[in-house]
Image (tube, rainbow, N blue to C red; front, top):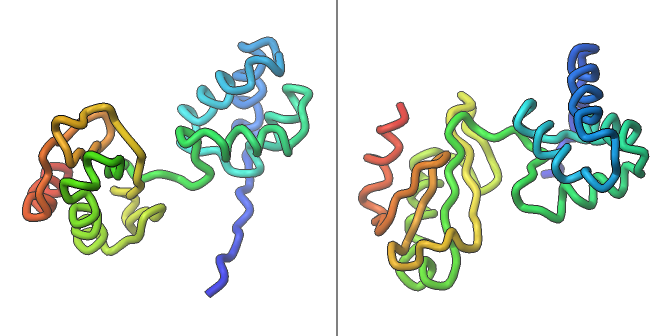
Length: 162
């Protein structure tokens, strides 16, 4: 099945907000990453249409902006859920069963990695290491970290956010 790309229609106030954020960084190309971080905080993600406005204001190519957005895992081009779930799949977590924990999240939420639940509450992603290897396997939901997560605890963890 092919994925259908939906263009995001930016409102005039959204374009104005992007321009204002770029201006706080003096529209300086060297501040592109910082600017994108602020814009993502504002919108929650960085769709192509937002990247086009950033490129025009920062005086760089759309390809350069896209390259930065796709290179750094912090940035996303898809909207995240209200409670973004990140499962660590680094070596320590993987060895201690992260794959089974991830499978349980997929089953409970009925979504795949990179997707968001229909109600917009949860999104699911993987990351390589959160630096808490002694607590493996580790899951983060927003800023909250869960250590030594067993598949049996997944439903209980999700319930905290419902």
